[in-house]
Image 1: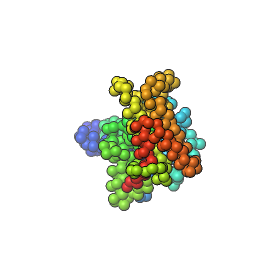
Image 2: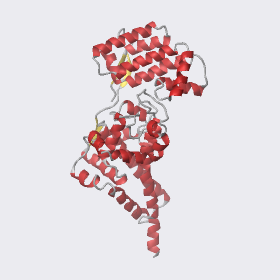
Image 3: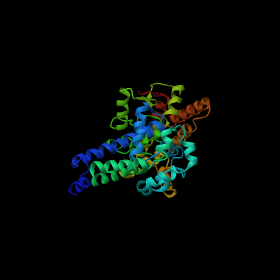
Image 4: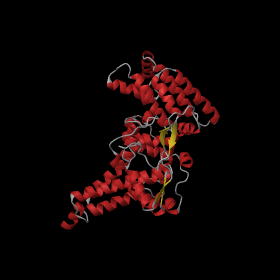
Length: 394
């Protein structure tokens, strides 16, 4: 009886609290790595390709530690990008509310994952081999059950508690924090047509997934970090696997550079406009709108809110707040003009499938009108825009 009680309390290992913590960190971080590298960057967006053995190790661990089916996860995520911030978005806090996404994100995921039409539409290209069809998908609940048994055998009743925390880890951080807070607060490097934002300082906890705005700007990029202070833990693992010959990076986001003394927009300018429009719009907000807005001082907090609202054209404001914003714009010299130029620039970048010669002519007209405006920051931006170019990054 004492041996049985001892086993129930401490399991086969009789481990101390230090070993419990190490086990918990190893398993949860292993799950984070498998989700961000395999499900997200490799399967959903094809930004990186792993050696078949590594890919299957990730797939097996996802099954064991979460029970998530690859096809379902990929389909839900791809639909999020395709229908972002609309009523069809599986988990937008703008639609469902921040509390719902933060605390009931797993319910939203399950509802979306059960849509067979979406699975057929957005789940294309995911594994369909024998083990996927007959084990991982058919018996998805068995993986977490086996992990529970392993945890209990190793650590007894403490193992059961550790397993419960493991099961809550991905639903909270991925379904709740990233899908919820990642579209609710944080800073933005790019003016994407959604509310995505980067969260800090969670890089070590969630593998770089906190750089959500960067990801929405360049979904297919295997690297999420864009600025020096941003830490993408998943990218560090990819680099290590690549050095070992176990991974091949297929896509990395390009950068934006500028050429001096370019008189007219050329092919390089147009390519940069189409590929880097989110970064260009962000530079316009910080380099043109912000200085004009700051000409008449307001409170720092109010100024920050105005800058963010004007950067997106007030797109995500309710009607009453949008009316207040319009009133502010009318009271500030030049602000209405630079906001109109922003709307024209958005139109240029949004309709990027038009004839390139037409796009070139409209861009030349935009630059000429900006230079004739007499607004110094707008004139400077137009000169810079004409010389922009894509900078490939390794």
